Amino acid sequence: MSTIAQILKDCRTGMEKSVEAAKHQFASIRSGKASASMLDQVKVEVYGTEMALNQCATVAAPEPRMLIVTPFDKTQAKAIEKAIRDANLGLDPAHQGGIIRVPLPSMNEERRKELAKVLHKYAEEGHIAIRHQRTHARDTLKKLGGVSEDDVKHAEKDLQKHHDEFIAKVDQAMKAKEKEIMEV
Image (cartoon, rainbow, N blue to C red; front, top):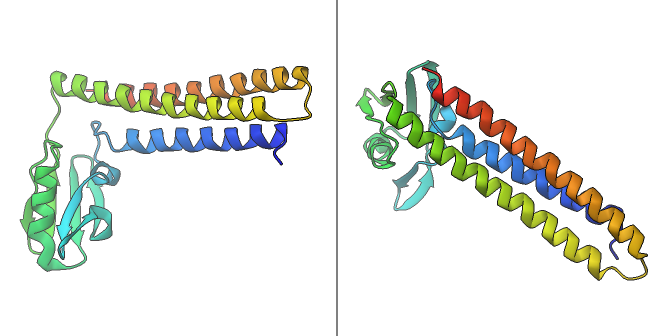
C-alpha cells in the first residue's frame, strides 16, 4: 500500500525525469556552437530498418561550426548523408573518404527566432509532463485510505511546492538555451 511519503517521492522522481527529458530536447536544438547531440533526432534507413544516427555512426564536434559523422559501416555513408539532409535541420552534409562533414551555416535572426519558438514548445511539453505528475500524485493521494484530511492537504501543498520547483528548473534551462540561441 502506498504512503504519502512514497507518493511524494514517486512524483518527485517523475518530475525529475520530465526535466531531464526537456533538457535533452533543448540540447538537440542548434545554437551557435556545434554539438554532437544536434543530430540525436536524425533517423537513418540502414539494413532495411530505421535507426537513430548514434546507433550507426559516431558524431563529433571538433570545431565550433563543424560536425564530423563517422559511420560504423562505411557503405552506409550515403544513407546517413541523405538522412541528415532530409532531417529538416538546415544542414548540408558532404561525404568524403568514409566520413561525413557537416558544416553549420551561420544563423540569421529569423532562424534564431524559429528555434526559440521550438524551444518554447519543448519547454511547454516539459511543463505539461510535470503537471501530469502532480495530477497523478494528487489523484493517488485522494484515494488513500486511513489518512486524515489534514495530512492530505499538507501533502498537496508539498506537491505544489515540488511542481513549482520543477517548472522553475525547466524555465531556467529554457532561458539559458534561449540566451545561447540568440547570441550572435
